[in-house]
Image (cartoon, rainbow, N blue to C red; front, side):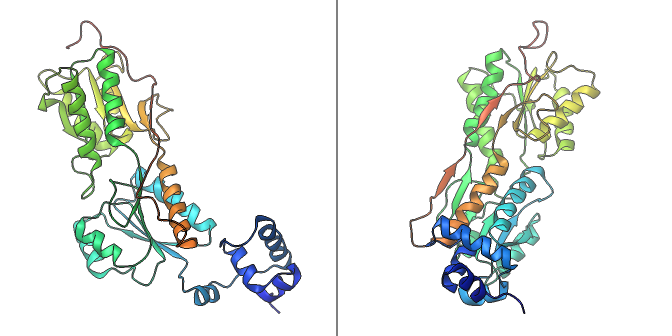
Length: 340
């Protein structure tokens, strides 16, 4: 006969409801009792029935995740970290990849997550109409991109501050011809390229450097795009002595283009990225480090906390994660004989 929750309760000397709360991570059970119940359940080989739990709690034990371009490193890293937290808590993930305008419109028109998920993690920035649609689900909502918005807990970074630190680093090294590889064609409604561009322009103005539109190129937030953009910048009448790439992947593409043009980094051109990609240290890339996986894990934890303690306190509107400039081998002062 299969072991039941009643068998576990009898062996542990507690009620069946206490066993249920303990094994589901619900509040109201001390750590000592929770540990004891887990040990008894493991000894007896008890596995909770997902269908029974769902009927008893009204939950689906599923978290909906909507994301653009899950094949890209940033979104994939956030998703992987969040999924690990959800899985450890006994939740499945229902993923919707909304990388095209058509897929996005279809999702927000039909809202296929309705009554199928207990919460939603958004890795894209919804407009006002889309935000209202998600709020209509009546479930906890969290995001890892963009600024604060009603009804959402947003876990993110200060993009402007991070980009300013990168560009200011190049200015302080003595560079005056500073290019930027941007991500203007990024995901719909994505504010990151806008914020980082604004930071770039602000630091140039602050340093008394006139902005040259010929020193800005779109890299599409990909390695190949970064290579194309760097090649475009090198074709300018007065090419840059330093480049700020809005992502490490675009910076990697820029390094490849410079190598193909037989230019040395940082002797001929300095390059700074943004993200601290897992390969950034391998290639010695100076970059702005942000906790990408940490943002996904924190957003997941906040959603689970809202599910387990809905009446304890109002969830935060925004949680800002730390960033820092990491100096490596791709930046240096410009050579005196190079263009300034």
